[in-house]
Amino acid sequence: MNAEILIGGLIVTVVAVAVALAAGLAVQRFVPVEDRQENNDVAGIAFAIIGVLYAILMTFVIVSVWEAGDGAQDSSRAEARAVVDLNHYADTLPAAEGAAMRELTGEYIHIVEQQEWPAMAGGQPVGRAGSAVISKLWKCVDAPLPDGADAAANRQSEARADLRALTLNRDARLAAADAGLPKVMWLALIVGDVLTLANALMFGVKGSGEYLTIIALLAAMSALMLFAVYELEFPFQRGESVTVDVFTDVVDDGTAR
Image (tube, rainbow, N blue to C red; front, top):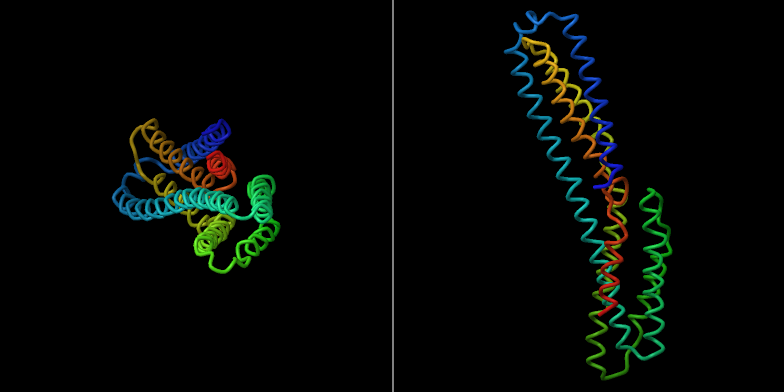
């Protein structure tokens, strides 16, 4: 966790608590505690229903964005492993064909690291350069083999499987880069947060300190959860993003062997 996330989370929490405390002070001023205490039973039932529904929704969303981030890391690593395996296949080819294939895998690695990852981090389209290299790799892998070369045919079959894995995991990575929450989900989260806090404001609690403390704690917790969802929404953007090191480390490790 970097300092940017800590500072951002602190600012969001402080602002949310300040707004909630202002609302609590306004309620205390204009709605006597005795009047609110008369409705504590009704407010408690409403809070139980709203609070449970909101907790279920928030849990579902946080788990979804967390798993999306894990999936983005897994697909990026699998993509890198497929590139490494194709490099190993190139080592089994004749000198000219092997050199051509290693040049293509190197070009693909450069495109992913220097072009696609910065584009994903900025929420921009990645372009078609990577897809063009994959098309060229298919031509290399599908090149005719000499008759009777059974071992070479087996290696070629494995290379085709590696290239399919590369394509599938690349598609998964690019899909994850744009897979944010639907706007209606954000609407549900924000409105649910406001309704939960508004319901808590209806309770009648003796003592301003206790009442405002409850409101502040609820506002802080809700704000932190919304901030966590925001940071995790896009796996390759914002504070808790999947960095290019996930891809590069696998490539470097496989190349060094």
